[in-house]
Length: 123
Image 1 (cartoon, rainbow, N blue to C red):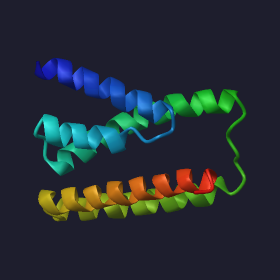
Image 2 (image 1 turned 120 degrees about the vertical axis):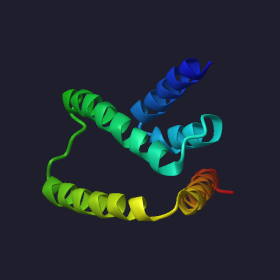
Image 3 (image 1 turned 45 degrees about the horizontal axis):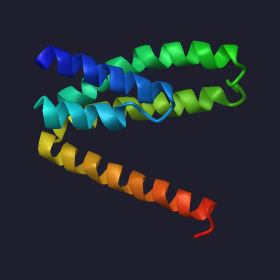
Image 4 (image 1 turned 30 degrees about the horizontal axis):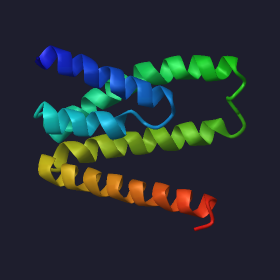
């Protein structure tokens, strides 16, 4: 059963990641809630899967002409520097605190997305 859930969660994370929705927003809660992984392990697994998914997505988006390279170096540098800082910080923060921070992030993300829907519909 564990193997089936791992494969299923990988498929779901990959599918939503391929859609550009961020597979980690789904994969991390699935790993922590249903498989009992701690937050750091779940985030580490998500990062490894993200690298593979990002490479495939990069090739597909590049072939379709959706890659804009202007000022890309600054985005890459900022992303790399703060990814390193965040990774180092995450190793020192207790798993429960990381779970609460990530949960808060998901709540804020959901609120923002709902507000976008209401704004589009003029509500």
